[in-house]
Image 1: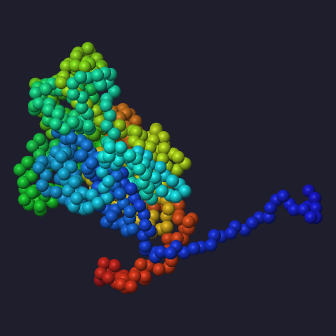
Image 2: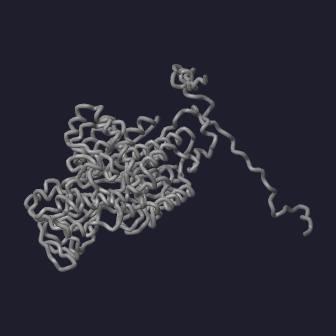
Image 3: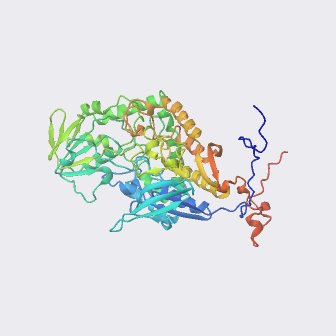
Length: 579
């Protein structure tokens, strides 16, 4: 190669020194929270907790809760079927900060639970932020502005018009059991009698003295059957699957001992003690939650508690179904307890042993205008069919949620709903979930886990406000690592054994997508201590130093502020004196 001729330039440009962007001070105090808007979808328990904690803990907050129903309560508003009730003792199913010693029963009816959560919402001001009868149709992330844009339908107006709203942060509190579905049975909608779904019950329907069919063997059916059995003429219970019926640990149906051998029995008379003597209630509640949180061993394959439950539950079912040994044989599962959701089912075994109940394990072939026909050709006419057949638990049938690059959450999760510790996923910045995939607990307290998830998201929003952060997003590697952990954890549990369960998206042997991979206390600890290194961040104006503000604090600039606050009681950390 020769030299470049005079008067010409080389085609290769001279290397340029990068020009540093001029640093600009963010004109706010280092401890000042920037204004931020948060939208919560859903006003069930998670949404109510968010409606309490977010306004309590966050400054400069614009906050709204959109709820498709006219009232708060979520599942406890929507589920109104006969016998709907808590399937753990109600004294545990409540907020940690709002104890209620006045439950009418140990397994309180659904309406009473709904009233409790409405009371909590009223007492702590949640209704100030609630927009009821508002159904979210779409949520899309605007990357250029770092905003979530929502399309929302007004269900309480004649035109049901659609409007838009936007926020910096979107918090989904929809829950897992939200999209109910009809069973896929040929001719179901040709039935001329009353057709009902447990999750879409028609208030005021009178079933007394009628011939009814109940389809399903999940927790809803196990509550419906003993309630309806008392007053119907005949009840055909179509239960193709098998399930364990646990023994209630409290109340009129409680047994003398738990499967672990401990005596933890309370009678209905104790209900009055709790109402009249709060100290008695607080002692009971601590003991109850201790017991519930001690049961995690039942979920581990081959554990002594697991073996003990098989023996005790089997004998209990055999004894209560002594009048119908063929039903006992049909109902007894080949899989271990807790593989499917374990329910105490107060009164269920006693009900199906009655003469007016036909327990039918044969598969339904089709439905006629008059009733149901099983595969053996037997036709049974009924006045009503109640489908207690559950929900869509694939996490993909909701409204479109669209993240970075137009990515649909349903498309991302079509094979499996991967998350980071159940509350977020990559490609969806500033998007959080409560009761999302891998968030439920197989044993122990659920409500404390819901509280900790809300606490976690509050801390994330505070981080956005204080540290000049435009978006926070779970790293793809963090999502992968959590899924690897799940894949390593669940094979040692009964949840991954062969049984059809909504824990596995309604499959027989799929991946466990609904449950937390650990005990409820494990979830409580994980969600109490965020690992911010598992997230990635985009900064406002691309300024990573912006969190330092302008060199001042709010105490510096407010004339009335205390500028020696660090000497106040509570700030000074006095170490122990060593003798």
